Every structure is written in structure tokens, then in C-alpha cells.
Image (cartoon, rainbow over all chains, first blue to last red; front, side, top):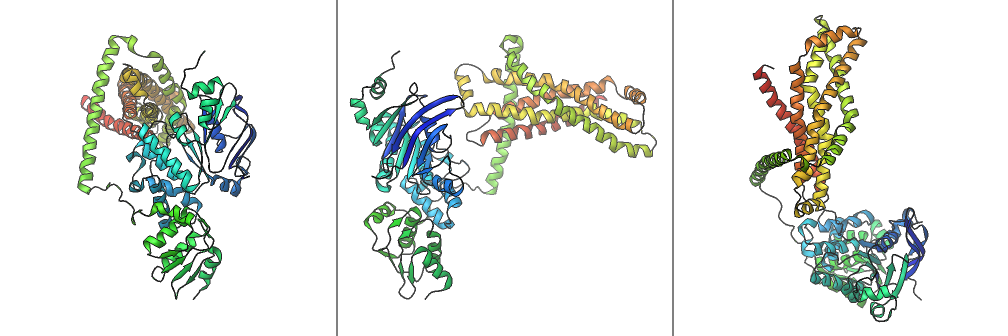
Length: 251
Length: 370
């Protein structure tokens, strides 16, 4: 059996005394598109922060390709960080750099590639997300959807094995959002990149997700796991049912 | 045909290059670790490279794909034996142009640059005049109906801009008084008029240095804070929210801050000037002058007009510093650097206005023989 790319074991995440997630365990398989779902305040962003190393777990372990990011230090941590890339909700591109410079930044720091090679790799990454013509533009000179695609290109700069996307569809029109879904599928299929996506856009989830987990605020953990269509058609949990059928919450 | 450096590269990357046939045999891996060395081979042997054999190549990352693309497209090298997986990953880049797309043209000829900068200065002056006009209208409405003023915000701002600035404004002024006394005592002693140090320090501080230094401290502390606070609200669309809720940002944000500036600046100025004179006194007492002699000299040297000169100026400086801080905040653009730019502009404009208006005051007081 192939080792999962991410293993979460009995994770408890908290801000001070405020426990957000308790005893959460799950795996992300290699090459799959994995979506984290849930209502507002259920801990999706907290889980994302823990997975990418920004919020140390109060208890439990998170292993990325077998390595524990939170306990690793020095070169070991650096090598674990290179295994994943992150696209933040706002894109978080550096406004003072062109799209090409945003993509080359990590290569400049972590590889010995000469400038010509870095620029070519950046152009290739940007061409994968359809932005080759905009390599010399600053983030403020392109649209919100383009910024998100450029952020994906930046996240792929070091050929990570897994990409974390935080609310990729947020603030995008349905057409741009569908384009982004296609891009995710194409990168997943052609490059074999695994995806961990935080989202609550049902249309996108059906389009891209191989597997989803649903978090719940009251349970402080996972209440459902499976393929999106299975959860929609078969899950008995009332909240899961309401979520997938877009029903208003009942008091 | 091999040299020492080339042998190392061949050992590290697993490649083998025969210059006679122009054939490059690639190793098993082509990744960011080995590509930098291969890139130098590509640069050196561009002309002699003809064919590349990728039969042994099994692992290839983004940097490796870039190397293969460059071999094929830029150097015209024929690549043989590429595995179907790697060929498929290279395929999306078949139509990647050889050269990077041109960046948008941002370089303007000097003349256009000068014209644009001049136009910006005029637009800025117009914005300041419009802002003053808008403020005066709003202030008049607020004066007619004081309940419209957000007094809670005004007192809070007054505390932050005034009470919290007591230490820094006092220290700056006290030390300035000491420095002036030290610097003037020696030359005045040569003429036997050491005691006139008190006149110099007191007049300079009450009429000029006290109001100016207090205003500069306020520009650095409070003008910048107003710009950052309002600028952040602008970036977060909070100003738009106020406007669409029917709440005038001028009344809601600017009037309380300008009133606070108007209130605290004269008080701070009097306090700072007094401490500056005390600094001068301290130096003179250390030099052996009794306190009462210094006090009598001070009482004889300054008049109400000297005190009023400073106070009148400080009212104007207070309005200017608070007003320009708010204006720069409201002018904040978008992006991460916008608030920083507004803050810097608030301080620079504040200090520039303080000095300019002080020069105007100097001319007016001279004409009035104050």
C-alpha cells in the first residue's frame, strides 16, 4: 500500500484555551484531490494552518510524506517545506514584484539555478496556469482570478508534491471559478500533484474532489468522510444532508 | 575530450558529453540539484551540441523540464529516447514562446514624467483646498449642532495625541532649552551679558521653537497615526461602508480628530515651552546664577504677546497636523504598501506645512510689530 502524503493523527488544535479541533485523524492519499468542508467557524482554516505548519498542534501529529513539520528543524524542516506549496485565499502575491518574480523568488532562495533558467521555469509555470503573457505584470495589473492562478504557479515553483488551496473559488465568478477547477484537475492529472483544498463551493467540490471530509463546530472534529456524491446521497447526518442539499439550518 | 571541471559535472549529474560528435547523454535524474551545472554546459557548448540522449532519464522536475525545453527550443538540439511520461509533461510547453512577453510599458520620457509630477502637485493642492472647504462646511454644521460631533472619539483622540505625548514633547523641549542655553552662554559671556541667555531661550522657545517642536512631535506621533488608522479603514472598505450607511466620513472621522488636535496642541505647546525654559534655567543655575535672578530676568524679557504668538500658531499647527493626517488617510490607495505611503506623506506634508505656515506667521507678526 502506498504511504499517504499527509497523515493526521489525533490532532488537537487550539488558540490558547479555546480548543477548535479535538482528536482529529485522517490521511490524504498521494495524487488525490482532498477537500476540507464545513460551516463557518468549524475549524477549516485552523486545520489548514496546522497542516502547513503555521499553528503547532496542542496534541497529536501531522506527518507530511512521513516527516513531522512541527518537530523538524533546520535542513529537515526546509526539505519538508519544499514538499508543499500554498495558495492563500487572497493570493498573497508580493505586490512589489512581477508575476515572474513572484514565481522565481523561492527558486532564487532554494536552488542553484542560474537567472536564465529560473526565469524559464517561471515562464513554464505561468504558462501552465495560462499566464505566460502576463509574466512582466504586477499583481495589481491583473484580475483577481489571474492573481489566484499566479499564486498557484508560485506555489508550484519548487515542484511540490502537494498543493494547499485556501478557498480557491472565493470572490470569483462562476466562469473563472470553473476555469480554476479545470486547472486543478489538469495539474492533478498531468503532474500528479496532490491537492488539499479548503472550500464550501459545492459546484467546485463536485467538479474536483476525489474525497472530502466535513468538520463540525460542535463536534470539534470530523463528522463525515467520503466521495462528495456519496455524502450527498447517502450520509444520514442531518448537518451533512443540509449542507449538500443547501437547506437552511434548523434551530 | 574532457577537462577537470567537466569531469566533476559529469560525475555529479550522470551526463556524458562527447564534443566530437556533439552528443549529450543525460543521466537518470534531471532536477533542480543537477540542472544548474548542466545549464553551464549548455551555455558553453551551445554550438557543438547536436543531439541529446534521454534514454536513461527517469526523474525530471520543473527545472529538468526547463532544461529539456531549452535544449530543444533554444539550442535546436534533437532529443532522443525521452520516456512517454516525461514527453507528456513537456508537451504543454510546445507553444511556449522563445522570449518572455514584453512587460507593460511603464517608462515615460522625462518630459511626460515632469508633466505628470507637476500635475500631481496641482491635483494635491486642489485636493487639500477641497478638503479644507469640506471640513469648514462640516465643522460649521457641527458647531450649529454640537450633538453631531462624536465627543467620545474626540476625547479619546485627545488623550492619545495629548496626554500620551507629554513625556516625549516635554523631554524634547527640555533638552532643547538646555542645548540652547549651553550654546549661547559662552558667546554671550564674552560680552558680559550671560544673563541674557534667559531672554534668548525664553523668546525662542515661546515664539518659535516650542510651537514648532510640539507640532513636529504631533506630526510624527498623531498625524501618522491618523493617516494609518483612516488608511487602514479605507483599504478595508470601512470608509465606503460609512458612506453607504449615510454617515459622512468627514463628520465621523475627521472632525473629532481635528478638534482633538485643536484642543491639545496649544496645551502641549505651553507645557513644552515651559519645560524648555526650565531646561535653560537648569543650565544657568549650574553655571552659578541664582534662581530669582533668572526669574526676574524672564519676567522682564517676555510679554503676553510672546506667549500669545506661540499659542496662536499652535492652534493653526494643530489643525494642520490633524487635518493633513486625516486627508492622507482618506487618500490611501490599494495594496499592502498604501497605508505606509499615506503615513509617510502625512508626516512629510505635516512638517512641510508647519514650516511654511510658520514663515507666513513670521512675516505677519513682523508687519504687526508683535
